[in-house]
Every structure is written in structure tokens, then in C-alpha cells.
Image 1 (cartoon, one colour):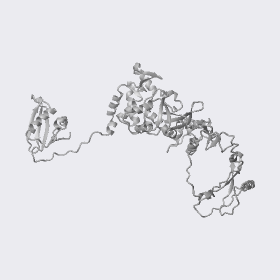
Image 2 (tube, helix red, strand yellow):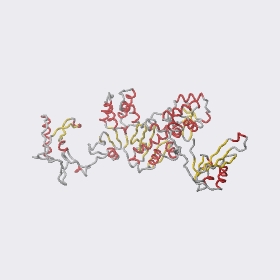
Image 3 (tube, rainbow, N blue to C red):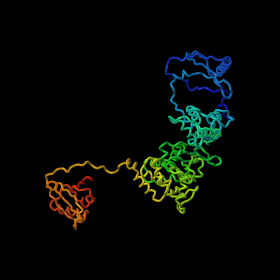
Image 4 (cartoon, rainbow, N blue to C red):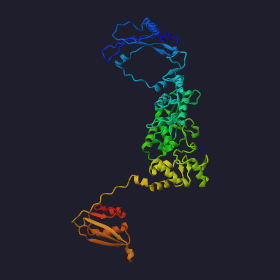
Length: 564
């Protein structure tokens, strides 16, 4: 600093000059802006005159007879605890100035560039920290500004929606410092809904106090360092999803760089647990895209979600989009036991959810335990966790459902998910519950559900309209074939009469046979075709007439009559 001491300012009037070219201010109007001076107290007038003389002496301003004039005033200066900052009110002049198109940089981008900063020129050079846009930045770390935190600490519980919006607005700028932010503020979100009556409950008060306490404890985040490896932790529940981005600190321990969480949309709450876990990972990659894209990083998970996504056959819709998005990143998956993922596991879960992937709450835990004991399930193939019998299958722990509760599971799933159909019912129930032949039971249940049958999409090809056989005057243009059965009840050795009738002449050939197989019909028609092969043949919807044997003659067109 001694070598370059000449570049540093010695006092507030030593600010240097621009000598490259004269400064110009382009205006949108030629009418001059001229305002009269503001009225000031005698003390303020002395201070203003003193500072004007100093500015004149430092050649920072000069006397002018311009037709433009703007008033001066004194503003409060925090570090000296009094109004001594000289300000000029240029608001009317600014209103007619042509603005320069200079986009402001993003705050988070600026903060990321301060990773290795140790000294800050906007403060005393002896200081190693800076207060910047509500944040206090030290070497490699960032925390909320003390002044703002003290203001938030003094806030009283809101009395109406407007006050609640103000509180959430002041807290929301620090959401990246708060783990479980979306989960904590969920009770407060309910009060913001349209047509929701204001009712401040004990749960709302708890969320209000918890948000304040999270900030009062001065959470510390590590500034992002592009040279250090990246680690992503994620988790999901039926309420919210969340993620944490971490990097190793100076001691090698992983330290949070940023927290992220959000509540689930109404339609996302219908996802099964595997889809929610995948959603949490994809959402985390979206949020931290600018840190992760183009870099190698590690996703800490219990493998189940990503393994499930890779093994799903014929990916469609959102699963295909998620798989495509994951393929854009260069990541490794590191196994993390569910109980060890403490920070990301911020969402309330089922009592045995740390072992059981149980997101679809179709049954109560106490009810499950009671009926398992009453039905005397075979304990040899099940594992007991928290007094509940579960089965490990395909890396998932599934609750063993006794016979007495199976109908209730199916009925609750139908009502909760709006009669989604057989395959979606299987996808929703089987990841969490198990019993023998569960897929077959679900299929039978859906087929016998009146609502499902009335509203299901018809996949059968629609029949055409009924039509009469068109008239013809040429023999062998149209032949009709049909069968009459039941003659074995009249002491006949032949059971069927196969009739072939010419549509033009009404001439009939009658063939008694014991069967109505494809070979039988082929023999009957072969005798008729010895006379002449017809142009068209009209038959009933018998499987024999769709076989290759009867359709091998390219010159013969076989038409099926409508069923009745």
C-alpha cells in the first residue's frame, strides 16, 4: 500500500477528476429546470455554507449563472449520528434525463465474486468485513446484516394479512439462510389464501417465532468457491421439497453454501414417494444450475429414487423430462443412509418413514399394527420395525397389509386420488404397501368399480352404422354364409347346417356338419367356388372368417356383419 499510496484518497474532498473529455447530460426537453431553495434552520445553513466553501476550495464545484438550479438539503449520516451529508435534489432534472441502458448485475452474482476477498475499499482498510445490501460479508462467509436482524427481532405478531405480508417480505430475502424455510412458513401461507378467514392459531405463532429465531441466531453461509467440489443433498415429503448445496471449508468439513425449499403444488401432492424424491433432486439441480452446470458434483442420496427412475420402462411425460434434464449434468451418486441425511430431511414424516418409503397415508399406523396382530401374519418373511411388519423388496421397505385392511386401502386410494385407473393405482399403492397378488386385486377392484367403468376411456374401435346389403342383379356378386345349430337335440348325427345363399337369385346351398371350424367352412365354400368364385362374401363375426385360410384368396372380399 505504501508503493501505491498516491492512488488512495486522503479525505472526502480528494476524489480526483475526469480529464478524458467533458461530461455531458442529454435531456429529453429544452425547458430548463429551475427550483427555489429549500428552507433550512440556522444550524443547517451554517453546515451547508461550510461544505460549499470546502467544495469550492477543492475545485470540485464552481460558481455558475446557469438557468438550471436544484435545491440542496442535509441527510442523516449513520456513522456520525447527525445530518451532515450534503445532498442535491436532482429528481426533476433526472425525470428529463436520457437514461443510459446499463443493466444492473444480479446481487447473488456479485456476492459469489467476493469469495476470496479480504479487504473492502468502501470501509476503513483496517476492517475485514462489509455490509452489502442487507448482508454482512467476511472472508469467505456471509451472514444477515445485524441492523436488519434487530429490526426483525422487534416485530410483533401480525394482526392482519397486510402486516403478515410485510413480515414475510422482510424474512423472505434471507430464505437461503434458513433450512426448512418452506416447511416452517406453511401455516402462515394458509392465511394468505384468497377468501381465507383470518385466524392466528398457536401453529401460526410457532412458525412466526421460529422464523425470527432462525435469523436471530445469525446463520452463516460459506461463499461459493468455483475451485472447491460441490455436494447436493435433497429430500422430500408430502408437504415440501428441499435441498442444500455444500462445499468443504478450510477444515475439510462440508459447510452450507445455500438452502433451498418450496412447498408442493396441489397436483404434486399426488405423486408417489419415488416421484417426489426425483422431483426434489430435479428441483435442486434447477435451483443450483448456475453452480452445477459444466462441473462435476456429488448427489448424496439413498439411491432409491435415481435407481427407480433408471429402471422405469418406457419413460413418458414428466419422468422422461426429468431423465432428460438429469442427463445434462455430470454427477456421481454417493450412498447416504436416510437417517444420516439430517439437514435435508427437514420435513415431517410418518413415524417409521426413515425405514419405510411411506408417503401415501391410506392407513393409520396404529390401525396397521392392530390388524397385523389380529390377522396373525407370518413373521418369517417380514421384518419388524417400530412394531410394524414390513417387507424389503427391490430396495424398498413396504408395509405388510393384513387381509382385513386390503379393501380399505383400495377404497381410500380410489377416493383420495380420484379413481385414476388400474395402472396408476398400482403405481401409487405398490411402492408403499405389500400383500400377495396385490396387482391382481387392484385390477379386479377397478374393474368392479361403477365410477371407473362409467368414466373410463373407451379403447375399443367404434362400430360403423347399420346398413342394408346393397341390391344386386348379377349372380355370384354377393354370397351370404351363416350357420344354424342345435340339430343334435333332434336325434341327428349332424349338429350344424351351414347355409350359403346367393344374394341375387336367392339360391341356397345347405351343408350339414358336426362342427363349425375354419376347415368346415373352407370345405363348404370350396364346393360352391367350383361353380364360380364370388366377388364378395358376407359372413357373421366368426373367428373362422378372420383366419389366413379363408383370406388367402386375394380376389375375394370378406365383409363382417354387425353384432347384435
